[in-house]
Amino acid sequence: MRNMISTKDFWSMFGHLRQEELFFKVHPELIEIVSEVEIKKTECPSCKQDTRDSWIYTFDGLDYVEPVREICRDCEKEALSKEVGYSLSEKRKAVIAKGWFFLNESDTSGFKNFEEHDEKSIFAKRAAMEYTKRLLAGEQLNLMMLGTTGTGKSHLAKAIAKTVKHKGKNVAYLTAARLFNKIKETFNNAYERERFNEHFKTFDVIVIDDVGLETKKVSEVSWSTSEWTELMNLRDGKSTIWTSNFDEVSLGKVIGERTVSRMYENTIFIDNFTGEDFRKRKKVEVI
Image (cartoon, rainbow, N blue to C red; front, side, top):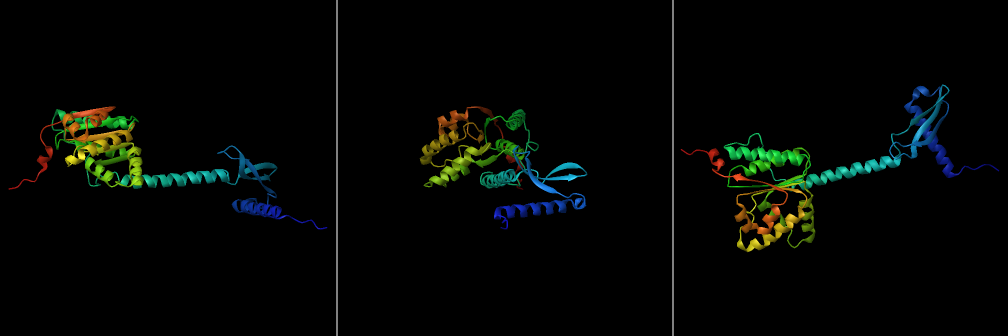
């Protein structure tokens, strides 16, 4: 009776022939001098298991092992999956950042062009730069900058945001008014509010400019105070930067004493932004 070859054996033999053919395509110079080529499983350098396909052949009396691929198929699939996952994650971060980083590309605010008008502004700049260094060193630290209008708070806040973002930190920058408008957009939508909360607590650093100007109606004070409490809870253990034109006492009346008290925790204060509105020096003179 004639011996029959099973389908499994046939495809195994076919695969072997294909691998041998591939081997000689890679090494055409060995066609005449290597007579036998085997495919065997050898140790994968990634998972340390005998799962990597390798060519085994004899040449000039010596046995050679040449891997068909760098790592085994399963490890290749896993690596590809991680690569795709990372790529999707980075794209998602970019989309989120676009909706939270409201700094115009044309904005030139930086440490180098910050105008040092007096000892207070010199101190403020140095303190802001030192704070930035600590953030980049991995510290989780808050910053509160208080002072009158046009004295450089926002300029330094932007400089910090740009610097840490350039160094790879996940950064958000927006005014308190814009922040609360984003909250209002989630009204009566539990999913959108959950997504807002997730984004807000994810950022390495969030800069909230002009705190206290988000509430324009007396009727909203109670609501905004409650929201600030929730926002503070979401940023627990993260770095947040606040700027405000209010002093500590006035700010407490607007956003709540409890919120201001929470802002004291693990926070550096720069509260000597006082004096002339230096933006007035840049006005166009009218003749």
